[in-house]
Image 1: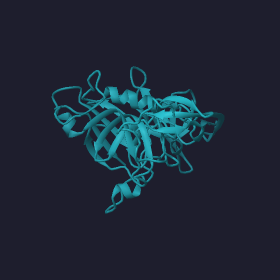
Image 2 (image 1 turned 180 degrees about the horizontal axis):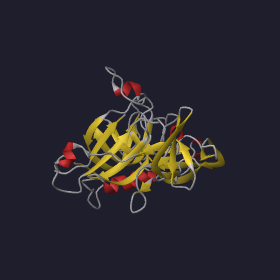
Image 3 (image 1 turned 60 degrees about the vertical axis):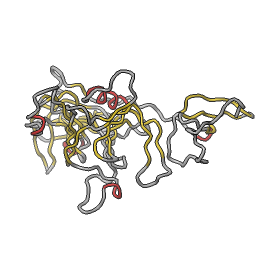
Image 4 (image 1 turned 135 degrees about the vertical axis):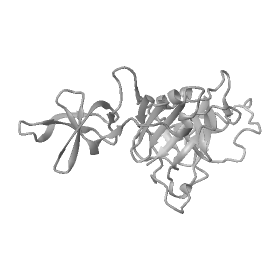
Amino acid sequence: PPPLLALGPGGRSLSTRVVRGSTIAYADEFDFAGRTFLLTWDRGIVPKDKVRPYPESSFEGVILRGERRLPIALFRGKDQPKYRQTAASRFEPSGEQWTRLSWVALTGETAEEDGVTYEQTTETGIWCARKDAAIARQVERAPARIEQQDEGRRSWIDISILGGTLVAYENRTPVYATLISPGRGGLPRRGVPTLETASTPTGLFPVVGKFLTATMVSGSNSDLVHAEVHYTQNIDGPYALHGAYWHDRFGEKKSGGCVNLSPIDSRRIFAWTEPRLPTGWHGMRTGAFPIKTLVHLHR
């Protein structure tokens, strides 16, 4: 590297390698001896030909307002077929599909055929198979701690771990719905630490920390590091809601236990939750704030 580049005590003086599967963020690049090097956010140096950029995900959820209301179906995993009813009231594929990560509003009407439940959509004459979609539905009541709150917007987040959905509420009013990626292990196993199974914990948790970016270390491999993880919101011990720039398989089980959001969704939810991060701050712990958004994680 050029002689003017001095690595201070905050650099990677004790790290000699970046483990395969880790991610880095870099602030600059330079050429030396016919090769290009990246200067990482923490003043490390990495050869540019040893990394590859992640494609940017454009996925985002649905602002619920006016005619946009629950229930909605979001499509994860792969493209899914649209169905129509024949004159004999049998369901058959229409020949069209919903693309992966798209969504459609539902009417609330259902029908069953040969053990398969179909949901009527707001597209004229079109139905979707319930098994093909992650369906976000409105809850009947907010958590008791929210109902009893007499200040603020009474904000809370409802997350279905197996359903792969997130709905943000202000008291009983849903304002946003999207897909999330929970832990690879799904639900916790009785008597087994969630970190061992890469499961997402269940329960009702306040947002206890908010950071524009954070460095995260894998619970199963301490050498595996994700740098500059966007819009991190701590909820319980090592678990957080945060952006995931390294995949776009939202709605599927992908994380080590945290709740993965798309980059766009993570920014939107971060700005919406309480307390809000003061302008110019990088992050904070929320213990001194009386009002905190609650996160309900369940099956």
